[in-house]
Image 1 (cartoon, rainbow, N blue to C red):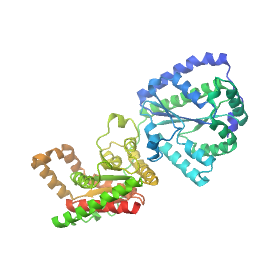
Image 2 (tube, one colour; image 1 turned 90 degrees about the horizontal axis):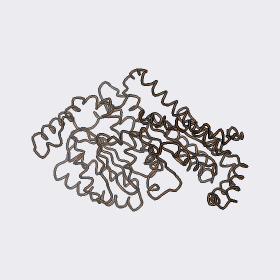
Image 3 (cartoon, rainbow, N blue to C red; image 1 turned 60 degrees about the vertical axis):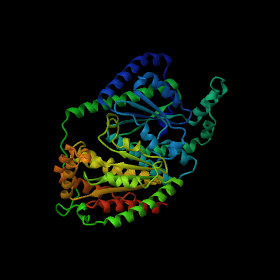
Length: 494
């Protein structure tokens, strides 16, 4: 496939200087239009080492308004990166809506390099490419424009360029020892790269080859491809705004009439005060030991608390944190997204809270808001919350593959018990802050939330991150069930 980028294209200096002013003006114009349309643009700069990718990044930053461009180079893996799943640092680099992200290196670099050096085999490369394809599809569905540029040089042209740079004192420093090492592996590098490009070339994220023998042709072609891609996307977005969308039918996998998975939870389970205090001491002590043991061998934990309003999530979290050294955990309360968070994919704000290895992240509500409140309240379109089941499963699978233990709890209570607790909160002065008009509004949509919860559990209770349905009618029983489950999960991991 790379023969198309070895045709000897050149652009004369005269022609380059004649066309450049108009090209730069149009680039800035579409960049301003992107900001107005709130479209995030991800530009991946990849290709043969020595093809001038760094020069292209400098040139694009010069031609675009740099105030709207974020440049990220992925070349050195820090300890902060190694202590989290591999995609964590890519999520940090994703541009918000209306900005351009220039990625010098990307999620392609590591799998291709690892395969070239024989550190992974073909099936592992294929699995990595499948994850990349899914990741890009997910970003595209969320509205991102992905422009992937591959800068190519033939083996002969690469040798000539490296030799020329090395001979001149003023450019000798630009040739790194790895450049010649990669040149020796050129044929293998090209075979693996072709496999990667073919496996991830798609309608929503196509690869574009840029011949890089002539620098003026290289830079001008890259800018022109970016301009055309952005113009096409802006035109498509404008067309979509005037085309009414057909409402999608509702979906639910609830079966057997109105019965749901939640109806199987035995709400009659309870503990006496003496039983509770005995078990509380026992499981808190055990959880403390297990949390330190997990920290020592860098096993992290993610604990998710979901459930009905007034189900007791806060009191359960307090019993968990009381058992763990404060240096090891962080509680992340999730409320309505901020403007910064709304400018990104909804999972972005959860990826940024992923803790280093050995730490415990406790989420008071979570990414499941996408398939619960956002679904019921119509904050997310049907196609968005349907996609979220797969997106969430992939997110959690990446955490587990990295070695993180995931514990997910839905605390279930009856509708009558919720009403009793609401009234109690209104009557007790120090509890009034816990009850809001929104709680009463949510209660009116009990059946809708129940159906959404059923679908959530059915679609996202996986073998690597199963849901635990907690009987919360008796708060004492719920707290012990949660502590006991957390201990069991950590013991299994250890």
